[in-house]
Image (cartoon, rainbow over all chains, first blue to last red):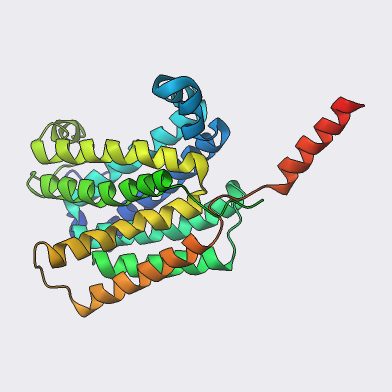
Length: 139
Length: 147
């Protein structure tokens, strides 16, 4: 079976599926990255305390020797480059609010499931309010 | 004991998290908008974009953001830090209004009110989840150690 790809790339800005895919890629990569990074920082412990004990170098060493941290940074870098790519094809007024507000909600869900954070009614309310608010603000 | 209070230093770090991210993003947007269209077939041009002045300034700001963000995550929950990050949009909008004298639409004022309300909700609660399971484990270990 052969798959033929169009030789000329489709204009992504005109295709709603391509726009959705670009935003979904940013949201998925940044949620994964943020959850992994948060897990890494929790396993390392309070950086201010570490710095008080072993200085700035000790704090930097504690972060840079965590494999979880690098897994998180990998996904955050992926999110960053997919954001650059999306910004080059779509308007900031679409990409900015859409990815920022959606990420807040996906992070609340992921924080509860994977980080076992206590996402109570107050935090759900905040996630939704901030999500709508950021959308309105950045639009 | 749930940790309710943050030190002034910790508030300063949350403030840095809030301000540096939207400023960095604005620089990136300004830089990328000036670039010719980048296609998936030529990802190398994305690397070249990193060395243009606006993108470089944006990246410098985002590195500052990342350092303060990591510090905040080491003593607070992700679901506590993220709404604080969003408060940066409010600070930027208010700066644009009172410093640059830009007009703010009714829609954006509504956004400012909603984000502020949301951040207020989160700020009232504890900044860190205490896991009873982990505490129990520690207690068990301590008991086992004494036996």
